[in-house]
Image (cartoon, rainbow, N blue to C red):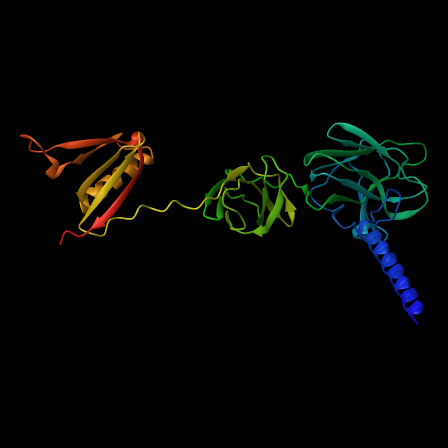
Length: 351
């Protein structure tokens, strides 16, 4: 009986290991060039040929609708010369999805930021095929031009869709980028504001922890030109950009603005008694005590706060009152702002 239980336990463990293996394979699986890719892999976002972020150059482009294409349509031309597709995107990864067939172009050029790459659409017939992939790009704006030349009898040049890593996006240059973005930090919050874009239907808010990104989108389709970010931590500097939206198309980013949320300084309490002992500790370690009225203490606090903010005189005169010695009608002692280390106020009532 004992041996049966031991054998069952081992079999159970083998089953668990096999399940974990196949689960891991499912999670980490990614499509490779040449495979059919009707829908984008996890972590990617697809943009169809009809998106207004694509610019088709040449006079012979036509729209073909068929269920074998991504989004049920593609753009194509029978005269590849002087025809190209141009677009810009933000991201680190790019994939080109097209129909592959025996009558398709065998030499198609992809220019990314001035660097040429090539792929072929010629081969066994297959729809929505992953034909080109470029990974490990810098996370910034990239300019892309796709073009082909007539190669023998293979004249068909087409464009179906692209995939971009989901933290990036396709840029529509017909939408102006927001401008004059400002960020103001508060206590566990950052207030953002920017200038309105006339044709924008909303805005996306993006935030990063380093200047110039990378940024993560923290809010989408924000209406108006202000946003309050409360998912922040005091003492951390955050960097922001904003993009404008129109029919889900996205503009270039705005200028970058940064802010460091901080807890607001608590104002010094005003004395509540009739009088108070003002004790001033100087940077030399010397302590000075003054017995003052409520109004005199308030005058000292107002001077100190003003000077702390960069305005007001550098010194403050304190009336010595009963400490007058000699034939003087009034004696004053001056304290210098830069010489004050700390001060305390002990209130009391003279009544």
